[in-house]
Image 1 (cartoon, rainbow over the protein chains, first blue to last red):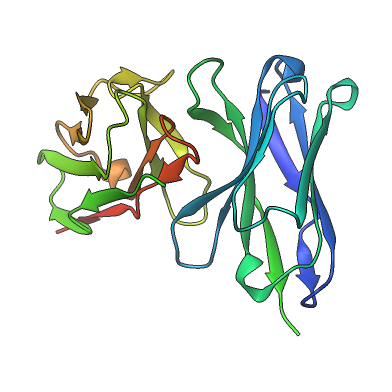
Image 2 (cartoon, one colour):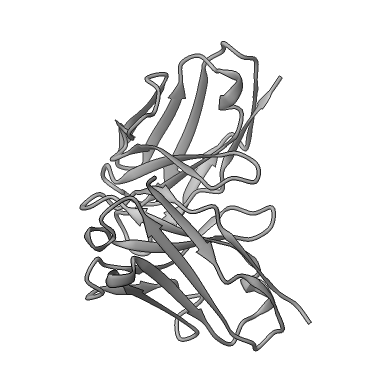
Amino acid sequence: EVQLVESGGGLVKPGGSLRLSCGASGFTFSGHSMNWVRQAPGKGLEWVSFISSSSIYIQYADSVKGRFTISRDNAKDSLYLQMNSLRTEDTAVYYCARGIPERGAYDLWGPGTMVTVSS
Amino acid sequence: ETVLTQSPATLSLSPGERATLSCRASQSVTNFLAWYQQKPGQAPRLLIYDASTRATGIPARFSGSGSGTDFTLTISSLEPEDFAVYYCQQRSNWPTTFGQGTKVEIK
């Protein structure tokens, strides 16, 4: 089955760290760019970070630049998001999403993992 | 950054009716616009990309149109499963941005 599954979410105090993982199956992971998108409770979608298929190109939203690090391991069909210096405003469901080659839209999403930053 | 403004915020319609959702960009995004559907507790699902191309498995009742700054998602005849929140997204200008969403609710 073609799917993405996130893990690693949880409750963390402000200033803390968390590492999210996204496992891919059913498709050639190394052939796709990947993204992290988040959604705060009751709010809309916010793009967080992008990584190209070979990790050559990496981008971050200004809101997370310098605090979050995206990476991938194509041998393990996995995507990661290292989140440091977490703030209360980082509280959200975090989705990993697959990019359509040359199109930029996201055609496959995981179910999401909840990150709560609270003291 | 490119701001996407969706209207209306809420659309109240009955099954079988036609739904017309709008997405307006603060600057041209050419045709690099996508539409997503999201139901409560679920991840978004891609409906349309490149303004008018239906994603794999998306029913023909969903159609997209527009270019430049004005885009429309049309659902020709609402099915019960179509009541959800719809988001537009542009990838023409960095960073990619999403609209705030239009909720299609049962009247």
